[in-house]
Image 1 (cartoon, rainbow, N blue to C red):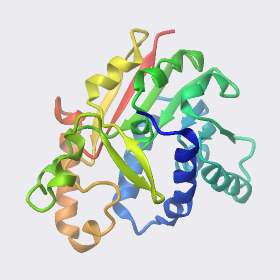
Image 2 (spheres, helix red, strand yellow):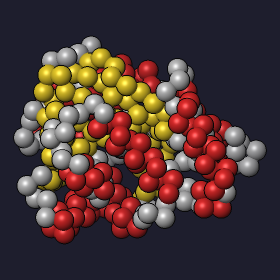
Image 3 (cartoon, rainbow, N blue to C red):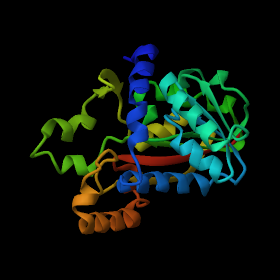
Image 4 (cartoon, rainbow, N blue to C red):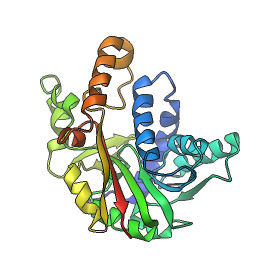
Length: 266
C-alpha cells in the first residue's frame, strides 16, 4: 500500500535541514555521491538537460549545473524545494537550475520535456510500491536516445547482513515481503526494496541497459558517518575493494544501493 502523498511530503520536508547538515566531513557520503555523479556524467553529454526526480535539497542538482548541465529539479516536499531555491539564489544559477513541486507518480506534468536524461538518486524510488507505474511514464519526458539513471536500494546489502548477530531486525529488513515502514522526520514512510532485474523490467521494452554498478557494496550504508572517521585504514581498504568489485555480475546489484542506467530507444 502506498502512503498518502501529503504525509510523504511532510516527512521529507522535515528532513531538509538534516540533509543539508551533511558536510565535507561526511567523507563516505561524499564518496558515494561522487560515484553517482561520475556514472551519470559518463552517459550524458555536457550541456544536456536533466529532469531530476526526488531532488531533495538540490545538492546533486547544484553539482550538475556547476559541471555545465541544465537541471529541472522536482520533489514532492515543499521543504526540499525551498532549500533548492535558496541555493539557486545564493549561487546565481537560475538560468540553469529550475524547480517544480511534483510527485513522480505524475511525471506528465513535468515542465519542459523532452529531457536528455532523467535522474533519481539515493533511493527515492524505493518510496513507491508501483515502480513500473513511475518508470512507465518516462517515454513522455525523455528524448529518443536519452538516459534514465536511478539509484535504488536493493534487497541484498552485505554490510547489513553481516551484522545479523547484533541486529537481526535491521539485517533482514530488506528481505521481508512487501518491504518495511521507515521513519522519516518522525513520520512513517513505506519502503520497498527491489532487485536489479525487477527495476530493469519495470522500464519496459523501449529501454535497454546502459550501465550498472553497486554502491557501498562492502563499505557501510550511506548514513554511517562514523566508520570512515574511526577506522580510516579499514575504510580505505573496503572502499578500494568496492571500486574493484562494483561492476562484477551479481555484485553490481548489491550494496546499500545500486546504480542503473537505461537508454530510451524512442
